[in-house]
Image 1 (cartoon, rainbow, N blue to C red):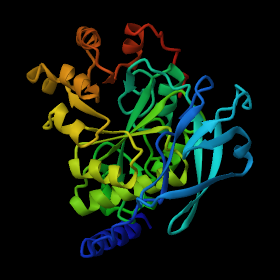
Image 2 (cartoon, rainbow, N blue to C red):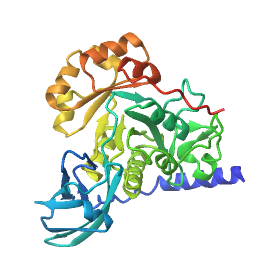
Image 3 (tube, helix red, strand yellow):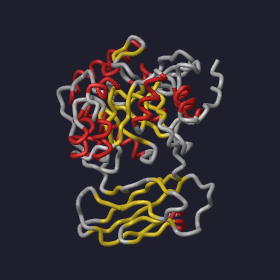
Image 4 (cartoon, rainbow, N blue to C red):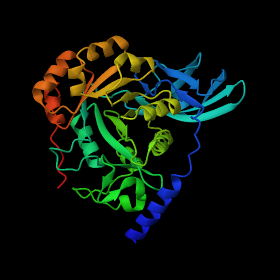
Length: 355
């Protein structure tokens, strides 16, 4: 049965390469920000991707009791919200000069940690769980990391799945259907997660950001763009905008995320663009290997001047971590989140047993 599914997926993959996916339009409505803080009433602007002028905005549903609109700006109602409430679901109805639009947005209380620690593929190395698993994500959350990074590929039948490499368990992901891929067992017994399963494992908290790397596809550029479109669509379907930061080595993938999701925080990984060039294209940040910043010693300072963030990967050496912290980088991606947490003064909680 597995062989049949694999062959069927390979046929589907081969056929799909002859057809270019239709370029989807972004959702018509978005917010400029998806988090709130009790001491700050302003949340963000309600905006259209179509460029249409907004005439009226109406709030519907239970969330309307906690929100108000001023000059197209979404704000908290003063003294209305319980301090324990982790998020508000806002149903926003917009009338423009040409159309009416309605969408629901999850606006999350900003308790996100800001300790600069990004767990590379989750917290796996010292916890007894597999990298890029729901378990490694939950270990990173438990430890108190600012973010947990993970990698996404596209199955032959168009489902985003979690894996660093283009091959896993003897299968090429782009040529294999999701039913075969999700039957693969990771080292601690968890099944290979789809992106949907993985995200749902991290959306019940508001402490740790999910750093989503869209991998360049072994099947070519069109497949990479298709993956990007499916990823953004799923993030919006799950109302996960507040949790997700995007990264990719593929510049075109980054630009496609920004086209589909103008609100998104997107950082570039490949190391071949100056901070000024990224700032000019409205990137959130650069996310470069430490060797790139060693060769270009002014780029950390240049990024700060340009108003973009700096993340450095993959740093596992204590002395290098300390040096980068002294230089004022915004984030450090590491396989040693426990060590990094100690350096920034947040002693990690003991890992939960997975055995």
